[in-house]
Image 1 (cartoon, one colour):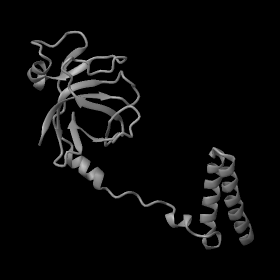
Image 2 (cartoon, helix red, strand yellow):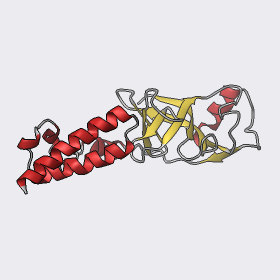
Image 3 (cartoon, one colour):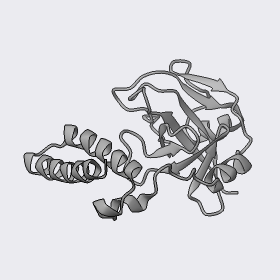
Image 4 (tube, one colour):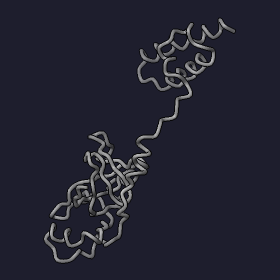
Length: 188
């Protein structure tokens, strides 16, 4: 498994002040999954709010990048200690051109080196629960729908109508809802 020295910072809920580590990450065979500290991460491919990777189990966003030689890994407006993995200390010191770890802002730590490959494979391969409502109801006409399906769609349209941003869209949603309500009323 390929390994690299990386900077890893928790972004979800912390902005630029989340826990941060300098550690040795490993990659899956495909290179799409990054393992560190007993967690598995995958790229957000530019779709993240503040991170570039997400934890496959918790969904938390993280920033994962190469280690900077000038030690400016944390955002300039961020703060907090950066935990440096003990087993890579000498490699990290070589990278930054220092002989010892600065006392301010850094702390040595142990991390979980076990890769959760089996757990992540089970998670990724697990069957999604079958939805309670069959997706085909969205393609049926009002007459083809059962009473339960009509009631479900009416409730859904009421919610969507409340949050519709534009009047034209709201009117279209209302028109569809009224059509379904009339069909349900005819049957009762």
